[in-house]
Each structure stands twice: as structure tokens, then as C-alpha cells.
Length: 578
Ligand SMILES: Nc1ncnc2c1ncn2[C@@H]1O[C@H](COP(=O)(O)OP(=O)(O)OP(=O)(O)O)[C@@H](O)[C@H]1O
Image 1 (cartoon, rainbow, N blue to C red):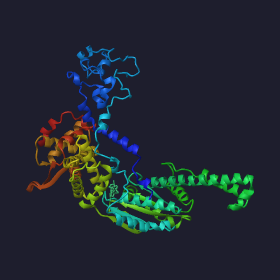
Image 2 (image 1 turned 90 degrees about the vertical axis):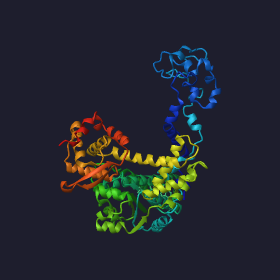
Image 3 (image 1 turned 60 degrees about the horizontal axis):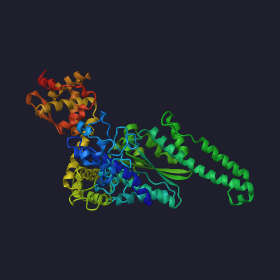
Image 4 (image 1 turned 180 degrees about the vertical axis):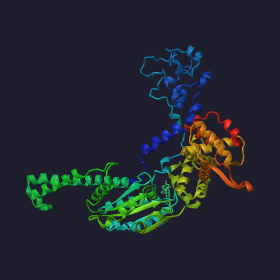
């Protein structure tokens, strides 16, 4: 295996990212450090306060403490931007004492002195603290691990099926199933990297094309993306061959004898071949992202893939999204291509976390696609522990984690549904929270805080992306809850909902539709609704909020339409109207 392919993104990116994150995550610390209160003149905001301690010895920051720090000395007293300098401080300014001329290029436009090394050390302090992480990138989803513990069986099965590609035969199509975060994509990518590197080693033409169908979700886009990838590769192959042929041509111009070792008997043959390649290169036209009839895109892809001999594995991640969005035409077309291809062969590897999507497939497609099926079961807590331990060893400094951190992350994630992504997120977030609170090690409390934070982030994201009508319904529930109404019933929600709609000029849906929206909110885990029988008055739904009121309300009010509701109080009083 080519180790380089699995190494995380270049170190620089890791570092810069870390620096970037620290800068944003460290807001609180920066705020804490900058003392904007000029009364405490000795600690007023100054470059020396923000610089690393070493800078104290530098001439710019050794200004006499009684006459105020250097920043004060050089700040323009007329500047309106003087939040951190009191008039008293300004009076003490001795422009000359700092030995700096205001017109000096060392002074920036606001009159703040730049350090000799052209920064004020704003980030130096933050960077100089012992970070908990050795390499945070390793915990990110974009990182492809070198090892995938507890996935040996699945990886070996994939390899056993795909090895035919290295023998020039067509591998069976594979369908990979499993819940989210069970390592499907990571394992499939790992196997494809191995396949491609082995094919290079033995000089067998075998390629893997990865398509994420959540993004590329129509037949047109899938075929266009494949066509363009193969066109690009073909152009490269042509360019390489032309280079070699042109070299031969120039050698043959000097000495026609060199052709005796080649496939060409005459210079004319060679010229003809060169001309043929040049025409091929000119004729290969990229598919635009929209606008062509689908059959033209299909035939362009077909010709591109069949340009020379090769076995191609097309990996369709989130294949269910493609079927959901645009039916099974793409899969039908791809699965019957082999009978028409002359030089190449294709095989499909579909990945899905929806076990039911094949119910919607044409039976022919279903049987062709599911020639081989590999299931990825959820991880249990012990397996998650191993996975986390492997990653933690390379991502954290030694002894940065207390003993209970990894087991707790594993236990939380196992409770969800054995999701390794969630477990890794928890561990990374716990580390970040510890780093932010300037703790020396990550402890159990950080994991618990991380769990709450991730949960809240999820809620915020779900609420933020709700359709406007659902947001109004949810806002009605929040208003009732905030006014101490318990066991809120559908009628109460509907009354407030109607008034809110009138207030913001939104369409008013029927009570039946509003009840449906409440059920959707219930399914999303935002409200908790139960059906209660009211005897001869029929049945109603009673509900309560399952998410934090303040945060949810803030997200709703950040929507420009709901934000227009200035005072919602009167609506609540009207809850028993009608
Ligand atoms: N056995 C494992 N060892 C190490 N890391 C793993 C393992 N399984 C999963 N992961 C990590 O967990 C994260 C999620 O894995 P992956 O994307 O492969 O899941 P998935 O099953 O494809 O999920 P989804 O269906 O949501 O795409 C990735 O960061 C991956 O590196």
C-alpha cells in the first residue's frame, strides 16, 4: 500500500487549521486577556499584555510602567477608537519617550505599535500553551485511517471479489449496507486505494471512480462526471503516447533504422498514428454540467470508458439518494453496459445505509446490483473503544486523556447506534473543550459537555432547516411552554399558530395539517407528543418540548420571517379563544 496516500493532509494544513481553530475557539481567552478597563492602567490593553512573556524584554514593551505602556504612548490621542485608553492615560502620553516617531513605518494607521517582528503576539500566547492535541486532523471525518479495526472480514470479502479486476476479469457488483458511521465508506476507500496501487504495481489497467450520490444525484450528473473523468484520463494517456511517438518520429527523421525496433514499418505509418491520436484528442469533448440530451451524455461516457482496455469499478456512495432522487435508470444503464463494451469492463459498488432502497429497484437491476452483498453491523462499545484508542494514540499528546475518557465516548456512541463517526466527534469535541478551558488533560466532564454540545448542535441544525410552517408551529409550542402551559394540546397550538401566521402574513394551514407537522416535529425529537383520549370529546395530542427552550427560540427568531414577530405575548393570552 502506498503509505503516502493514507497520510493525513500535509502537515502545514493541519497546523494552520489548528492555529485557525485555536484563534476562534480561544475567543474567550482573548477577551479575558485584553483588559479594556483603563482604570487599571498597569494592566490596560497593551501589546505587552498580548505578547508572549518573552516580549517583555523587548524595547517596545519595556516602557516605564509609570508612564504607561508603549501602546498608550503612541496612540493618537485624537483617535475616536480609544476604548482602551482613558483621557488620563492619554494626558500622560509622551510621544518622544518611546523613542518612536509617529511617522515611523512601524506605526500602523490606528497608531498601534507593531512589534519588531511585525506582530503583536495576539496568537503567540494561544499557540505557546501546551496543546492537548498532537494532530487533530486524525479525528476528522476527512482522514482515512491506515487501519480499520473490526472490519477485517468486510475488507477481505471486498478484496476477494475485486481481485478479479487485477486478472483482467469483471468483478461481481457489490452492495454494501450498514447504518451510518459503521465504516462502509472508509473500508471501501481503503480497498480501492489498495486495488489501484496493486494495479499500478503489476501494470494492470484497473481504476476506481468514487461518486457521492448525495451530491451527484441525477443520471445526467453521474454520467457527465464519469464521462469527464475518463475523458481527462484518456487525454493524459494520449498526451503520453504522443510524446513517445513524436520522439520516435524525430529520431526516425535522422535515422529511419530506429523504426525496426518499433511497431511501425515506415515513417508514414508512424505519421498516420500520430495524426490519429491528435484527432482523438481533438474530438474528445467534455460534457457540460447541463444542457445535453441524456443519451448523448451516455454515449460520450460509453466511448470514453471504452477508449482503451481497462477494468473500472464505479463506487456509488449513498446510492439510495440517487434512486430516491432520480429512479433506477442510471443503475439500469450502467449494469447492462458490459454486454456492449468492447475493450473495457465495469463493475458497480453501491454503498447505502438504507436497507430498503432495493425495494424500489427494477427486479433486473436489483439482481444485477446485488450479486454480492456485504453487511456492516454497528460497532459495540468495546469495538468503538479500540477504534478510538487507535486514533487517540496519534491524535493526542501522551497522557492527555484520563482513563475514563475513551470508554465513556465509546459508551455514549454505542448507545446511539454504534456509530464510529459520533464516537470520534465526541472525542475531538471533548479535547477541544478541554483545550478551550485551558485544562491540562481531557477528563470525563469534558466528554459529558461534548455530548451536550453535539446534541445541541444537532437540534440547532434541525430547527434551522425546518420549513417555515413547521417553524411557526414550533414557535407556538415554545410560546405556550414559556407561559407555563403544561400538556399543551393541538387546539391550543393551532390557535396561537393562526395568530402568528396572520402577524407575519403567512398562509394558514388547516388544523389537520398542523397536527401532521406536530407529528413530524415529534419524529425529529423536537417535541414529545402523546395521543390522549378525552372520552366523549374525542382524542387530542398533548405535547411538550424535548429541546432547550432558549436556544430553540433563538434559532427560530434568527429566521428573518419569524424575527418580525416583535411581541408575541398577546397571542398567548388568546390561546383559549375560538
Ligand atoms: N473500524 C474503523 N476504524 C477506524 N475508524 C473508523 C472505523 N470505522 C469507521 N471509522 C471512522 O468513522 C467515521 C465514519 O466512517 P464512514 O464514513 O466509513 O461511515 P459510513 O458507514 O460510510 O457512514 P455513512 O453511511 O454515514 O456514510 C470515519 O471518520 C471513519 O474513518
